[in-house]
Length: 248
Image (cartoon, rainbow, N blue to C red):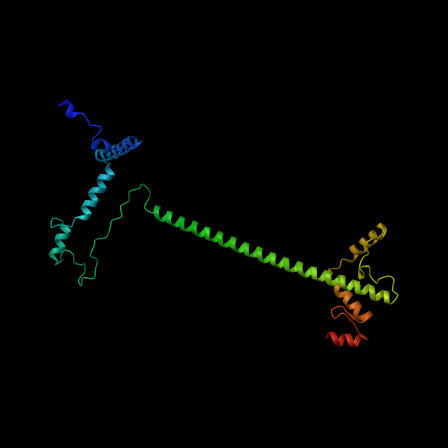
């Protein structure tokens, strides 16, 4: 008998056993997890419920059950012809379900929830206003940048036109044997000058205080009146009348 009970290592039962490494460890982990879940369920069932939980369960049970004849209000309605499931009112246009209960479980005052709601709405409105103001500030900054960039481009263009007018004025004055310009800024400044001349010119420039547009306007008028030359056309005319007729 003992020989029959011993395992036969050559039998199919022994060969079919799963002998993969680590499998016993996985089984023990699964069993431990299942045991822990069962323990949690048992603790939940054996846990003593609080007074609030018991009140809630009783209230839910009562609200789910329909009113019976033992209820005095329901009995009075039945005497007046009311039937269960029927809408209230003489013509049956009233409510069918009773007004739901809003149970207050917290310790705050009656208007606390409305106050919280109003504060939340005010906070949201303040946040929206901040976003709107930030958007407006970004738009204004972008507009100001575009204006500054446009003004800078126009100023660069006027500076180029002024240099072109100064160059033309210098050439035309020299053709008439004029060695000294009417104003120092009528001609282009030479690249190399003595320090004394530079100081004199700085004093004259500070005393003039003319903008680029004003200098361009004055120099354009000088070229037209003295040399009958239009900087915009690039042409020298025979007389003042012809240049005025041409430019008009």
